[in-house]
Image 1 (cartoon, helix red, strand yellow):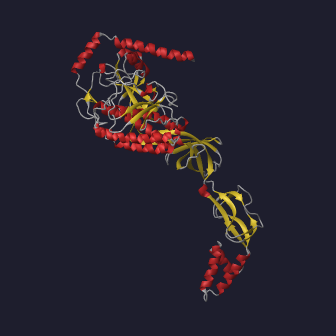
Image 2 (cartoon, one colour; image 1 turned 90 degrees about the vertical axis):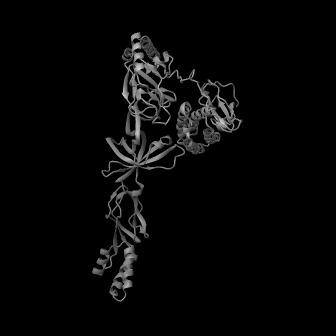
Image 3 (cartoon, one colour; image 1 turned 90 degrees about the horizontal axis):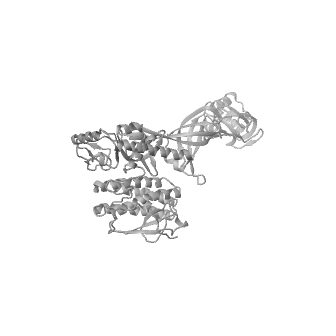
Length: 594
């Protein structure tokens, strides 16, 4: 296995070198033709934030509203790699057009069991006080149908009431109220009109009366025996109607956001092989079980054929759908993973020389053999689905942007952090300062290990972020703001929907990195913040955060190691970012406190 793992990257590197030979040793004739073509090619305008936008005239970006800029020649764009036709054939590069789905569907595997429907349980009672003479239902599990005779009862009180009825009937014309009262007395004991008329017609007092079932179901509990004396309203049997059942699944809290009322559910049970049942989510438990960290999801299922029985174990799949105007999807084979970032290569259109652009994308849900793309691609673009690793290796050999060599135009290396403190409008700094203050409340909640407060404060941060007028920025400043604000939105949303404290702290490290970077790049209006660092956080990779106090209070460990960390920078309105500046995740610690 180890040899195989070594051979694969060697083959990829050799293939990249071979392709590099074709790329960088193309004939002079092709270069002359390319130069000639460029001379006659009309000027293309693009967006610095969304390079996939290309127009033959200046204007505004249809996605973010920024002013379009002239597209530089692909030969000097570090994000675009040119290849010869021979190199493309050698690498067996294949592409596909980015598509969209109006409905994105994902699924969640769950387990659970069948339970009785609590709304269909009932008790069969005696409305007549007396002694049971005979039972027609004799054991637990027996099926009972509505209107079925279940018992015969002897009731001295009923005998007396019948005699009163016969006497009042004789004086019906003189004392109608008395007759009406005697009739109603029998009706209160559920004696029917037909039974009352029979007593009057026969002029005979009945000693025994039959009791009938008001509901259908299966006897769950027998509570009486022959000879028992019953009070009015006393229960004879508890029954459960099994023609409709509940299927109850346990769903972990982190998966609850995927589930909505009405989602389609399919399930099987080992007790009935080869049959799949289908229904929809009818109830989501509003309370989390503190021991299992799960919530109950309920499905109603018809059981007219009586195949299903309570307490059967089931395995289910819950399907969730995400509807929107346009859901961009891309094949999974097109995506290159690089930790927190995902990368695809997009074929640059309308060029005589095959060219492929390095593009970072923000992925959403996993949808079978596709991913939802939240940002970075638009429908109709052409992405590489086979050969992307070879293109990336060639870009690395050419010292261009790649997974291992992330270069930013205008910067000397991947650790470039620009300084816009002098050009950022004061109004934007004020609004951004409000965002920092909301961020501080999340930090404080994590210091105190209060996950619920962290969730609530993340929601406030997202609201504050949406209120910021990012249109106050333009050009590269606007682009940088958009890049970092997307990170903030994603990580804050994760914290808002996650109740596990340690997972919240993992998301907080990414959120903090974006906040620290933006604070250094854009500056603050009139407050002072301390950039602080703990080398032990983030699984030993180190993590940063901002604080209003110089005293260390570690949000990644709370009271376990509250003082672990050190102050790296004091950031006030006069702070100037150095260029180039090392990315905080790559800064080694010079020591820290415990």
